[in-house]
Image (cartoon, rainbow, N blue to C red; front, side):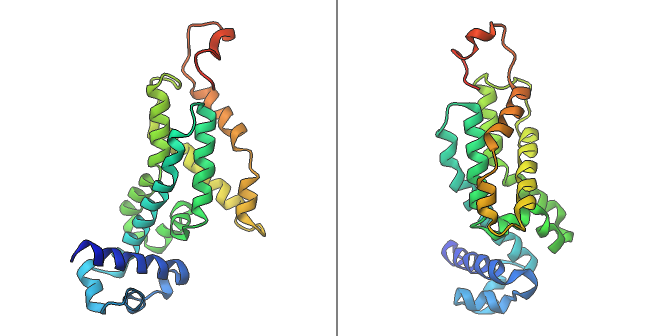
Length: 208
């Protein structure tokens, strides 16, 4: 199958699964949404589960693209990480499949695909890991920092924020009011690379 047709099918799957959910979305529904025959869907994927997970992966990759501009927008460690978390949480509200992945609904939907779901959750941390690695390599954060481990902690904070605000009248507005700069500042203080210089001269070298 050519890439354009597969992309068309995945776009249709994203729309259908986002609108109807996994249980109510049929292969027939996706085929109709994509304007192809049911048999064509099975040329792209082997099952509904595979189609669903492929749709989730497509959304995760779109989610990552939307946040990459933040990686070059700030020099300050706190501003970079807080800005990235805020950007990701804004984007989650545009992508229901990503939100479901982060809060555990995807695994509940396809529990037999635990390894694949964990891979997708890891993929969703890519921008956080990249930002942390960049700060470590620039000698802002400690040299023994494991970027993916720290990214898991930040992702857990994102998930907690999503769960905390999900029942609010306007969840997106509630998320926007959270003071991420203060929270990230506390975290960065613990991750900061120790320097053998006087505190008075620290700001001249690194703004954290």
